Amino acid sequence: MGRHPGPRHADVRDVLPGHDVRPRAAARAGGRRDRQPRGRGARARRAAVARHGVPVPALSLQRGAGRARVTAAIGAGPYSDVIRRRWRGPRFRGELTGANRVAEDVNPLCGDRVRVMLRVEGDAVAAARFVGDSCAICTAAADVASEMVEGRPARRGAVAVPDVLEALQADIRPTRMRCVTLPVSVLDAALGDGRAAAPAARSARP
Image 1 (cartoon, rainbow, N blue to C red):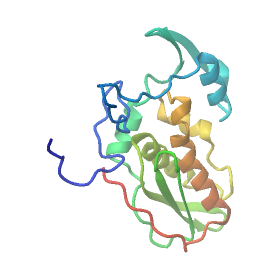
Image 2: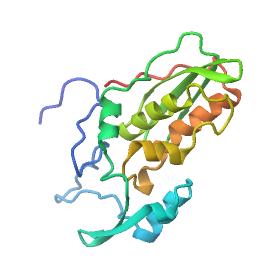
Image 3: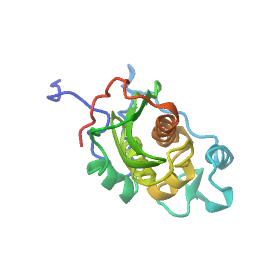
């Protein structure tokens, strides 16, 4: 069986409805493949989303394909138009000249890595950029968070997870919530005591 040419990157894949960005597990002998465990229903999804400060009344309960789903009223599916647009053409990705606040972190479970760079002037964020190797949701969340923080006070909590989720306009499953919280937590670290001595992350390709 032939191999696809070139290296594989976490966010260099087409996003199609009903498909995850991450590759599926390899098939076992006998033709069966490992499957990701199903969620524990609407209650587990609502609880997981609520932990990040999203009001539970803002979610609507829907039934489909034999299992319960909780869908954000503002979005439809995990890959909204906002995520697709921000993933394919992020506006705030790239190195930042004169950055004086830098932080970086990685999600060991999926390999997403994000580095956030800020230029703080006085008490406000004058500019923000990010680089990294991450999935579509994480890349879009980093781009949204970078845009939101510009012009805001340079202190922790300047950008909150619920604000980013609302901007993404997507139904983010609890198992993918870390894709959103990772760039927000890295941004928060940069706003705190980030230093420019952090190693550069590999830039993700569009």
